[in-house]
Length: 132
Image (cartoon, rainbow, N blue to C red; front, side, top):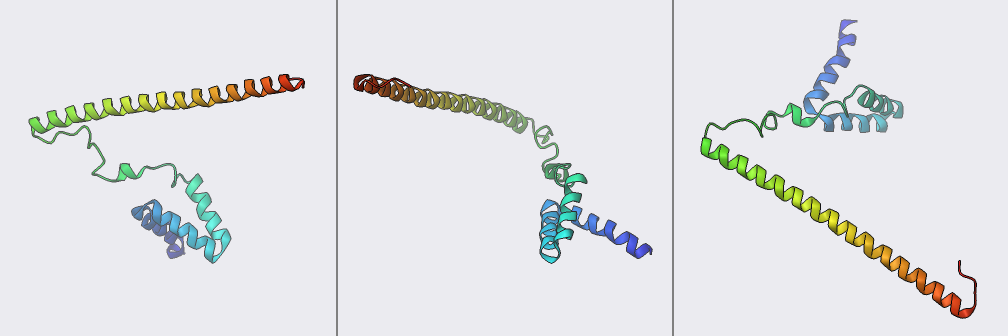
C-alpha cells in the first residue's frame, strides 16, 4: 500500500523538478491517452497552483537577486546601476512615445470619421433627404 500511496508524490516531485513544460506535456499525454486523466491534471495544475502559483524565475538561481547583488567590483556595480537607470529612462520615454502615437492615431481616426459623417450629411442635405 505504501508504494501505491507514494507514487503520486514522487510523480509530482519529478514533474516539479522539470517545471511547467513537464506539467503541460503530462496534461497533453493525459488527454491523448484518456481525456479524464488530462482533465484531472489540468484541474490539479490550476487549483493546485502549479500553473499560476510559482514563477520559473524564483527557481532559477541566476534570476534571484541578479539586479541587486553586488559583483564585488565597485566600478562595474556603478556602471551597472548607471546602465539600468538609463535603460529604465529609455523604457519610460519609449512608453510615453507609444502613448502619444496611439493618441495621434485615435485622433486621426476620429477626425476621419467626423469628416465622413459631415460629408454624408452635406450630401443628404443636397439631395433633400432627412439627415440621420
